[in-house]
Length: 358
Image (cartoon, rainbow, N blue to C red; front, side, top):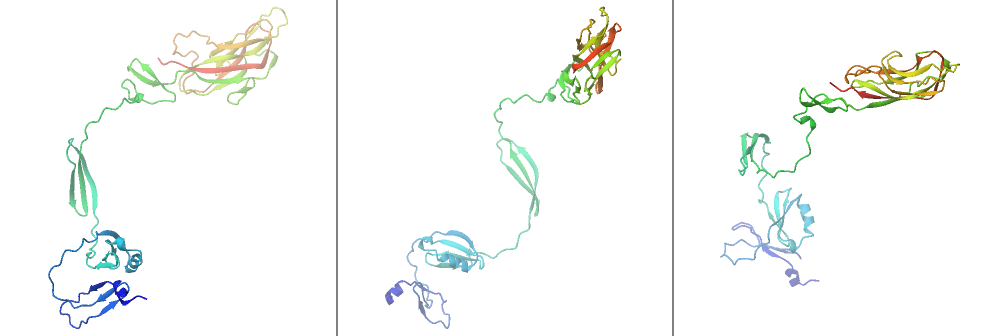
């Protein structure tokens, strides 16, 4: 059990200002282990006392909902927390922790003012000022509609960067830009003195027939024939899709043929031909036969049957945008005997060689 002295040693005695001349005020004293209140009559102001110790620095802790939340927080506060302050939102009161308890300042915060009018700011002119000048900000208009204009100082010229990669070909001064087809290449035009996009000049394809099969899934060569007299005799048709430029066929391959002459004179020769569009169309390939009654592999090669004086002329040419069928034909070149054709090993391969522009 504490003595009375110990009891009052642990209390804090402080006067309560009851105002001078307040009627009906009596003196009273109340003490607890942590607090004591001695009501004293307010006297006249005395002389100024000595300067007290420096107060604790003000440490703002922010808002707290109400006094109940603040009291719950006080359980963990001590002398080391002196100077901390909170605003109790529910009463708009500043509460200052003095190291042992809270001091309240009811008028620390003013009343909440009315909500302001929303303001809309639009960016106006943005100009560039001289190098080294100040940033200039100009606000015009009346709230809530304001316009913000800026004059931004120009930066100093930077260092030259490294050389970049070559620019687009289409932007070159000696290039005649225009419509580009797939795989187009630049070709020099003597008239315009500029490079001009033109169709790819390289070989297209190949397309082929091998024995009974075709590149497009169609029929290949006709079945083998024995002791036939037909001439011309179409034994295969090779379909070539339309191209984006005029072109001539470049052919290779061959078929096996043998004449069936009974005598030893062997005067009959059967050739293999390749013609455009029919068995009597332009001749674009040939495989010369063997007039000696032996099976010969007539090897196909390009052959136009006409003198080409102009590389861009029409001999053997298939126009751009035109699909075509090449006919493989057996034709008796001399003599009159029958012949035998063997599909085994028969083949034709076609490449498209674009015709150079004039």
